[in-house]
Length: 228
Image 1 (cartoon, rainbow, N blue to C red):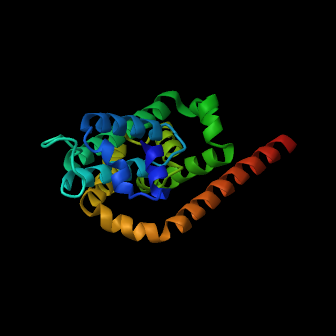
Image 2 (image 1 turned 60 degrees about the horizontal axis):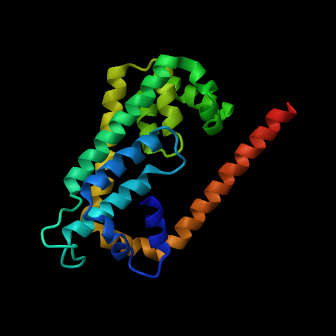
């Protein structure tokens, strides 16, 4: 569904109409939401924010049958509160799983092939340093920062950041950032989208430049390692 969301953003048809076919499959959407949050937690190179926004849009569609008629009267739909709760729990549990992996396996987790492909040695050292230096503040920042959530949560576990403190800080940060994205789009979807469409090509252009810069940095870092 995430792929369809991106296609709809650039399509000539209304994005909400384009996605409305999914708005009345709530159980599948909640399942999809949990799976995507788990995959994002383990380093999937796709921002969880896109999933949360997609689900929020579907909830908006379900709340406005006068604009987006359901397939039949009384058809179930994605509910904003339910989606927000499912998203929060999925994120919270996923973060704790990653933290637990880092705590149980320690530094050797960064030697695993899949992890090494996602996290460079330089990034690992920086993230470990931030975790030691800033503690709870770093833990909270990781939750708000795409790209370093996965290594950040691993590092929190690896340095034996107290479990209760991790759950508290990460839980507060997730409660602030996750449900709000779903609920904002569920209740103000068209208004937010209307503002976004004015600048969408600029936004995606900046994202493309960020991806190119990230790939370039990874490539130059590998070249330096080979030459050293």
